[in-house]
Length: 329
Image (cartoon, rainbow, N blue to C red; front, side, top):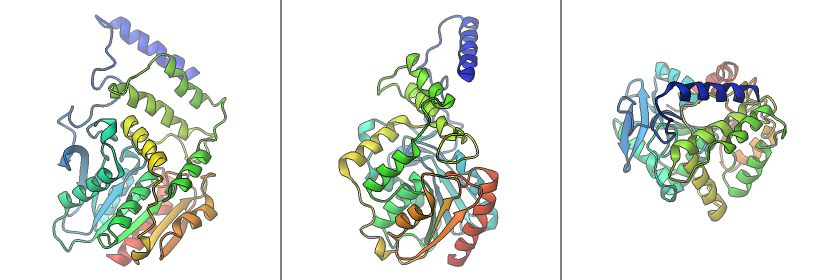
């Protein structure tokens, strides 16, 4: 509890130094502001929402759209992928709807279909010509989203790199999620995250508080006893609590299967998994990737689940990714 006690002492000192009590609903107090609250953040308007987004490189070169995990995370852990811009690719990042620094929406508005429409709108926004090649690079949930898009539009994408998607059918996703949550109940990180529930409670309309609490809980994934095997805590700007819960509820209710049309996607897929994620492994990677007819399967050494975030994993991942992209450009 050491870190939590330090936090509480600092919070008390801040409160004593102010003329009045702090308002946890004030934008930017608990978590960073979203793009509709801070005009200095790079953003685009797409599909009737405002998304935190930026692009790097020559807009006329093949486009590489980077899809972050979650649902509800942001693209900060994937910023190493900016270096593909110096390799001749137009690299596009965006925080998905309700995620990261993008505008928050109501819980009932989130659907898989609207997430796919957002991806299509982002591609359309940045695309410089009808002949420009489009590649997707998805991490975890982002790899699921990429696959759902390809399942719906098998002729729209020229190549895809998938990093440890939980699965493409609901039962696989559910089983994988259960394996990733096998924490020691005495874990300091997990205890610190859940302990804050005694101090901060929130309704569905209080998204600042919900996102703050979700960020605390998400930090437990970087604990030394986490099965995910990451090198440490992943960096992020802000977690989207409502979109995470909404998409999980949709999965339970709709039991999706995003593999039905994948046989029509004949292009080779680069599918990577990490050396240190105990919840994944080669056998599971083979099982999930087999939904595609043409797969190149690679293990990324010295990496945990977030293979592109930490130096060792990134340095081992990039050569495989670059070789794959260059073969298809």
